[in-house]
Image 1 (tube, helix red, strand yellow):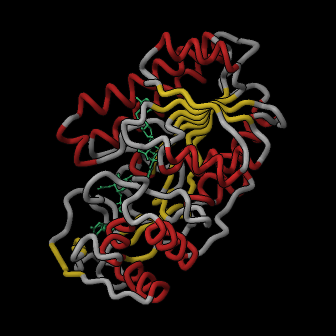
Image 2 (cartoon, helix red, strand yellow):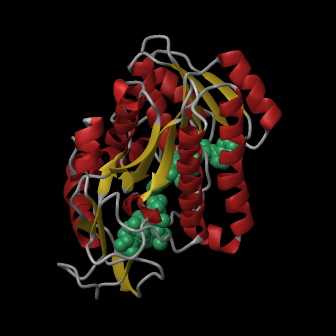
Length: 349
Ligand code: NAD
Ligand code: UD1
């Protein structure tokens, strides 16, 4: 693995920057391609400060085929972790073309360039949002898919494209078959324990944890709890929160597995990355109050459209095939979120 180069699209973003830390610490060379549409280069400076190692950064759009082709020729990566994408559900409903163009077309360009360069190992950031309605709140990889918004559908379409690329290898045997892991994230939260990198959302956060953190620090006045009449233990929504450092460690495990005999003849498989247990909104608020000593001002509001009552992972496949499971608990996730928030009240600015 030493000296193996991993190209990380979207590496300046929230999850990508944490992945760069783990990759550098594991001995990989790291090349980041990011257009900085939702991130700042400061995150990469901090990655280098945390690790004491350097990475190579290209400010480029993954839809820019000539630029990407040049980067692949120059850097000769052996694997790609593909984080680059837009991720706001509401924005995707308002601007579906933007989401399909950025996420789906971007992935088409990336895989075409990879194919031309014979770089066929790919780890893709998918999401639990690709799952359709289910009678069980615990989702396994073989559950039916059925995303309900353009963001989720862009992820589902990309999964389909990647499965088709891999399936085509069976029809046209090749020396370099596609080796693809579709990693379906549940709810990533938290930050690196140094407090130097973390989630830096633009404007008012859409997601629970950054919202709670900004109420705690006084940037926002009140959290709206979206619904307290769900059929859950306290009536509020239950999700499978996963520490971002645990999440990115799953990617390091996946790279090693794609490189192993298990994938010698190629393949494309989905793996849930979640803890396998859920917490309610009120449990998150209580944990935040306990760990930080702050009171979270909240009110009960109507349900948010498109929300499920309860959703958590069946993480057995990732344990069995990737030898991965979460190690951090809710207190770690809250403490690390708070450490990042207090050290960087205005994010990277
Ligand atoms: P992020 O916005 O912090 O990071 C994404 C990065 O990709 C940003 O740095 C952005 O500038 C870059 N980018 C976007 N479009 C690009 C393009 N066309 N060319 C080059 N760079 C581009 O988001 P994140 O939370 O780190 O998420 C990373 C990936 O994980 C995304 O694909 C997201 O959909 C997926 N995901 C995230 C979550 C979550 O809760 N954060 C959950 C499930 C899946
Ligand atoms: C949301 C997205 C999902 C995306 C994921 C990670 C929707 C419908 N789903 O998932 O596609 O993959 O983020 O980016 O947007 N909550 C509040 N008040 C808030 C915010 C959230 O009560 O201000 C509640 C929600 O109702 C939910 C829980 O907190 O029960 C978690 O919400 P959130 O962090 O937005 O994640 P998801 O809804 O799971």
